[in-house]
Length: 166
Image: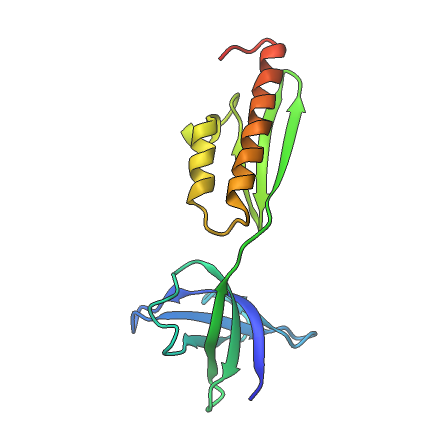
């Protein structure tokens, strides 16, 4: 029995209501890759083993181990670990124009932009902290939040120095 690893997001099946995923084999490397159900590439279904049913969440990225079904029509997910990403924090200042702190992890970016932010969650430190704390896919979330707050306060100090009032 060959066990293969990949990253996979699960979705709820409209027919059965069970969580399922889809994988496709890369034509050059022959590695399995998680794909969406609407993918144009040849894909195979992935279903949960009985031990995992009820333990995993929809639309969350998992690092999974798969084994082929007996009839080779798809794969059975035999283990799944939630993916956690390291976050990096970047400050972008273009005097009198752009003032941003970005928290980047995986393929997500959360902005703190007190000057031009679109809403509470991007214009205020509390809003960004609330968004960050709601994420369960960031490693060392407490440290990330602490570092973000330090950078955000430095950004606000620079804005005040440049003539903006709060």
